[in-house]
Amino acid sequence: MNGSGASTTASIRVPEGRTLGLAVALLLACAAAIPGTAHADLIVLTDGAVIKVASYQVTGDTVQLTLAEGGQLTMSIERVDRTIADEVVEREKTAGDVPEKPTDFTLSFSQGHALPDTPYADDIFAAAKDNDLNPSLLAAVAAEESRFDPRAVSRKGARGLLQVMPSTGIRLGVSPRDLFDPDTNLQVGARYLRQLIDRFGGDLALVLAAYNAGEGTVEHYGGVPPYRETLDYLQRIYSRLGLGPYPGA
Image 1 (cartoon, rainbow, N blue to C red):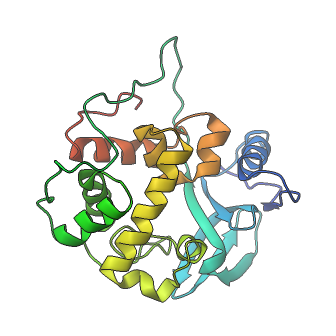
Image 2: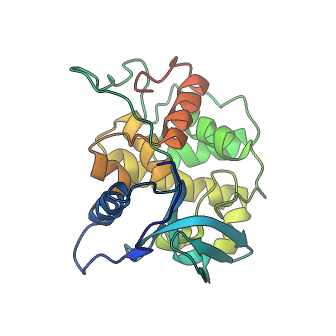
């Protein structure tokens, strides 16, 4: 969403028992109703709150948010579940516009899979096998997320080979500082990918979209969200997997 001006709301808290998808839906509805809403990011918190920000800065284990309506807020990075670039791609949908699932790629592990020709090949293969993942998928995500740099820290605060958010690590029983260990990071990221595969019925596009933009966002849109960041992400992963261009972009 581009233009000038600022949102009249900074945060929406979901009532207990409601879904994260509802939080995203409410925030997007409010933003869409405001003429001239400026480009911003959506910060999704672990408690279901969604904050629209003009900018943010991660420093160590804290993140400083500059709110879209003005003012600043500082919090622990462990409270942040996801950060989404709020740039929606407007395109007209037509009948049959839902991309077909790739038919020549399996997401699950097979004994016939070979070691990937990448750094950390043994660790990637082991994590993939432990979590019933195709090693090529895990290698492609690691290549895209960190270029195989185990000390990588993104602008969003994600860490390690698979750029796992500290909150995701905590949810899966791993402390943020341990996410810089390559084997630990791969195991945590692989476990999270397996959870997404199970949640979204083995749909590769939905799994990758959820890894990038969050499960709640995928559920809100009923498919791959129309965010430029997410669509570009799918394009690059599909290319790395030799699947050609992502048909939904």
